[in-house]
Length: 313
Image 1 (tube, rainbow, N blue to C red):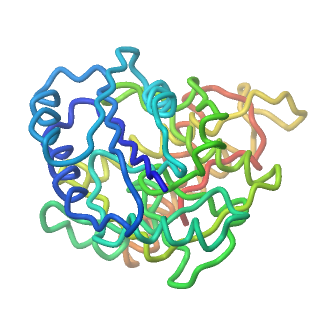
Image 2: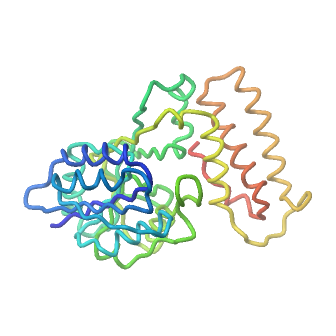
């Protein structure tokens, strides 16, 4: 079996070096070969120097994609991949030693499954504030955290693995295209959900997925993401990413669905009250919800309540 590990990167030379260093220590399954495909998506920092340094340490293939956007970078990786299984992770992730083995062994044990996903747990770069340490499980989506439990299970719609830790059988992956209307663009722009949208579509058509709890990775959370300002920006982006332009008949105020305005006020008031009286595991849910609603209102989109983005609560 050939395993293609794919990483897309943009101006994260420091964290990319840590990711590749950790990956170089992962156990390669007996009888398997691997390749590491890194797509440099228009980086202007020291990314090229980092890649040159690791080229002699692992079977590294460097792809340069000048068109900014995570979906463009993912598609570039897919085009050159040759693996029987394509395994995805990010440039700010630390993989566990048995990560590759877990995906390799599960893909052999379940030949009728084509999608695989594993847990993503936080790795704080510095000691986080208490409110985040105690309440992070109320806002897992903002930190790409995913944990479906310690036991293997069938992945259902709504349990899609996240982009920092999932795998797809190579032949199927190479038939697919990530939606270029989705995905981060550069450091701050773009939308979310290019990978979960694709995986959800596959699951809805009957493709089977398998949760692999042994395929563990740690997502590095730097100090600049350990703030309410970061969460505010994330959930407003998540709201715009999840909007729909469906035309539906619902009561409106100034063009906005009335339910949305009412819900925004309710969660804003609940946040103010619970912030002063209850643990962060409670008030962070209201904070995330109100910011998602604020993002939707700011986008001035008309979309039904069933499309309200998940806040991980």
